[in-house]
Amino acid sequence: MEDTKHPLAPAASLPLVSVPSHKLTIKFVVLFHKRYVVSNEESIYEGRFKVPAFLSCRSVFRFFLALGKCYIYVSASLIFPPPPPLR
Image (cartoon, rainbow, N blue to C red):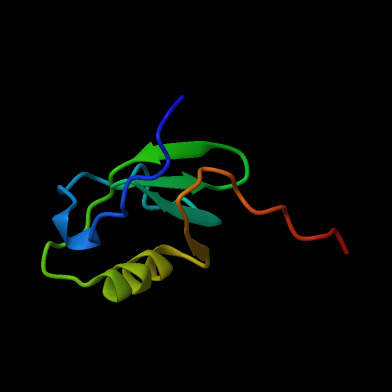
């Protein structure tokens, strides 16, 4: 069983790795022990994303928002929130 009590690492310490696709519409971003889990409701991409080292955590959230409309969740869990109700 994976230990979920690891402290969340400062985003600025993450290595630089490319985002899977610049066309991806990001719906969820979860920070989990130095890793981001991204879901576009069809696929889940898990990995480390390209973030300039000088950015603060708050700036990183704006960085992800700039990629497309999305919701940002910071959590010590990989459980996604329930989807919004259908209208």
